[in-house]
Length: 97
Image 1 (cartoon, rainbow, N blue to C red):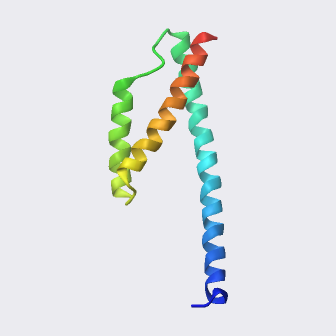
Image 2: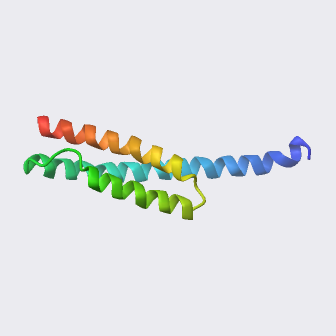
Image 3: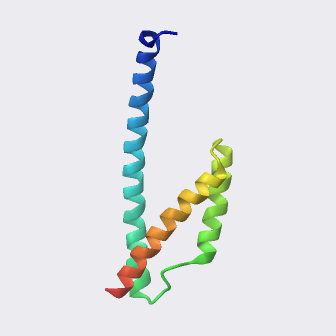
């Protein structure tokens, strides 16, 4: 194939990637709005910022979802652990006022 033959498909794929990236950002924003409210509730009721049991359940659930979606479960776990660390950081900040 020549460059002229692959460029339209490459452009289309990149546009799809851009749209998916935008959707991911908006979904993460919505997720953090929910976790921010959880952090406020935890702070108001003197609950710990971290919930290891819930985190373990979520990791197991997302590993299964990743496997079913043909996504590397290790990658999904690393991604979720990153998100969880950020959520806990926000919850700790909410507890400090």
